[in-house]
Length: 321
Image (spheres, rainbow, N blue to C red):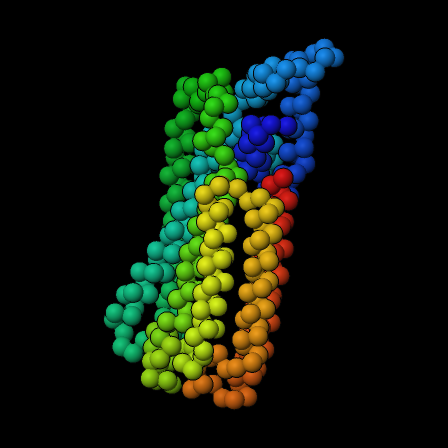
């Protein structure tokens, strides 16, 4: 099975629910193999050029992978028709999160600028309420616009779009590699998250309306050794390197995933030792008994996140095979 077929199959199943991807991928691969063998015929092993040419012919006969994926979709698509359904899904996956982030960020800035002092409870309440409203409005607006556009494709316009199957070419596969796009998006989100984690030692308590407890100093204990902070940033840098490799290669090979898993576990061990051997949080933010309970809860949370992340990563990788 060549990389060309792999990209084609990944593009088809990328539009389908995850629980059905493996079975459909196996079915499509078997179909492609049978069609290629039928074209080659004969018992002699075909030349590489002949096999590659037969594979291209089969893929072009199967047609646009986005259209083929819709033939495997059993969910109703009445309001948004099959011609507009892929762009509807793409819009929901990308535009809605951007709307949520933009709304939360703008309301946070506006609230902090107009309220003195800032109360974290009121801030969270306003952000949640306005973000939910913005998401509902964005969802309704996008759905209506796409539905109206889909209705405009009736008659001759729809027939014209149906004829695009013959115009599709295998050369378009590399431009629509769904798996590569997903990996790049995940890598970018991972880098953003790592940057936020790296900034934690600098976040002042006044930003969350607890600055009156320690004069607005950071949440981190000022007496924490520099070596611990350098070690923390060093592990984050290693994680960032793994994400950069995924971003540049647009792929997540087993070696890269294994390296990331090892770094995650070692980082969790490092943080566990730091939390259980010394006060990491600023001493003025909690009592002695409260600090001990907080350390234990934080350690449990760290390992829960690490275990969940590894399970999620490997399940995603297996689903893409």
